[in-house]
Image 1: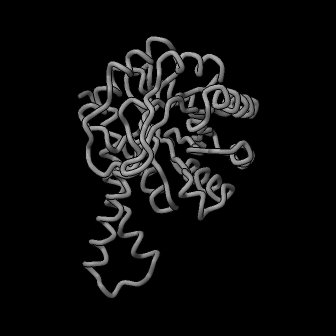
Image 2 (image 1 turned 60 degrees about the vertical axis):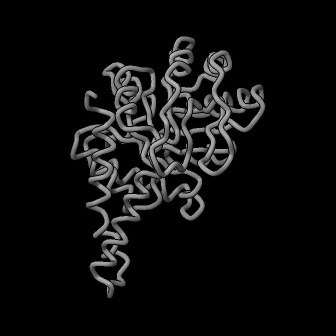
Image 3 (image 1 turned 180 degrees about the vertical axis):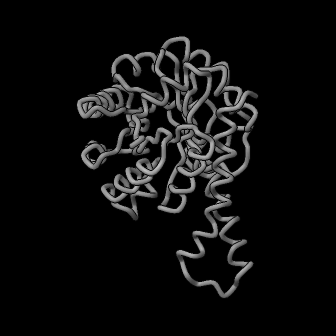
Length: 277
């Protein structure tokens, strides 16, 4: 059994000057490919179940899936609920066996975000697991605009919520399909100057790889969430498998054929957060 909490892997990552990848899962095949990539490289991995995943797979099923994958390897595996928007959802994940939950109150007024996040953090800590929160608002490509994290608000949020990790808005965007202009390193430094809580980048797929590696090595950013980049790899591999065999129809065979390419893509992500720039 190598299940770990988010706090356990992030504290070690920060001490060693690296970051851990939070890889967004949509099903068994991609979760297994990500676990296999981490096992091959001997590094920890955070398997994340976001709202899209939970829309078609119940939380208890996801918890058991992540537990099974963790039991079959010897690197730390965090089972993380990503973007939980309600206390009941976080409570269900904790009861099912997730080792980390994120409560996303970033669209709420500051006081309410702090109060509700603190409630979830206390609930998680009582169960012996970790909690991530978000201050500021990370927007979406071709969607809702971001609201940059204010360092003073970040300091208050960290102190009053007790979170183990803090997602920040510093130029990152969800669902970006191409590399963006990069993150605001001055804002990152200003936030890191007022709190010791490990920082998290959502929308990590849009961060240029060289900057991603440098920030992982040199700053308080200890977790990069990567989803879109790997979903693009999955789509490319799936189209190639079907093009190579237009008569293919067996779902298990098709998806099994996609896994090696997805594992390789995940290994590239993991390497970018571990190796010196």
